[in-house]
Image: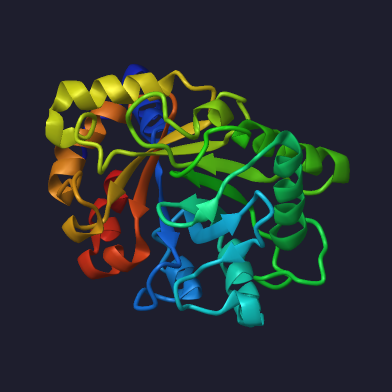
Length: 298
């Protein structure tokens, strides 16, 4: 039996609802590179689950240290064997997946001693991983889409200089845009990344709502929302909800997929800065299928 035709008002309402849903549709970012038992980089992107893949980590740099890429056994950058990832990176990019390189991490030897030191690190990142040139490019000739600041150690100084220097190198070389992202802890403001984020140069901020009981969802809706609203105030493009992909991925902060989609995401998807969910990490996601369970709700 044929139904009644929709009135113009009903059609408009449906179109507006569809537009709202589309506008608040988010993506998933995932960290890759810290366990050899995770899927390959090319397979990670071919799964079509992720909007961003963040290679982790350049864990040694600055203060006169020789920069070191540590992909935890995937390849040995010191011997040039990580250059084979160039084809994987380009494969990801052809699929529309942005590939970023994370500097820092929870374990490493890194830091910046001065504005001049920040310029040296920026030049290294530009020439070794981005649009510059170098006789030694650890990941080969593929050009990454950006740099992720996962600063969790040492001094909080000069990270804002590094962000400005990276963006200035794009302006001065007329190359493609370089994305900047940061992974601060959820207590606001972040101890290390705050000054850098406040430059207004960051496209994405994936806030780690784990290993910080005072602001993660397990501490209650109010504590979580208060923290999220504080992060909404930063001058950045989009905010991502950072979560562990399994109970084993972090000390605290795991949110079961069903609870995330029914109780947590509805609280923040209306935010004008909501971008999606960041997961630590691909290894744990492979074992739980967390991204598959939440993708249609993000």
